Length: 79
Image (cartoon, rainbow, N blue to C red; front, side, top):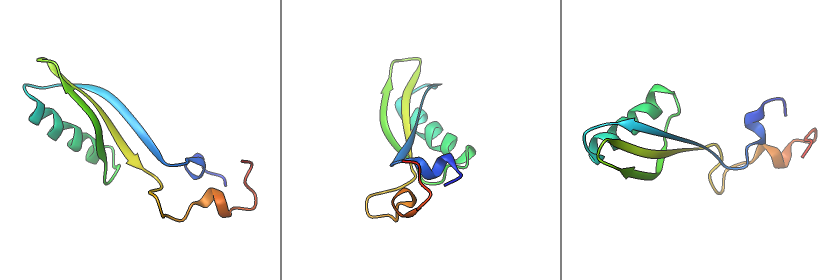
């Protein structure tokens, strides 16, 4: 395993605050952010609108349950 990505157990979370006018706009901005970061399919794990913007946590699964886990099969693993 040479890549740090190969050592991830399940997912990467990104949490941020997006300025927006309502919760729906914030959700759309969060999904757009995932596309702009080239994350592919993402899930919104948490969102809270406070009147000025939205606090969101995006999750990009590297390995979903049932996937082939590289860290289990690589003989050179340091785990």
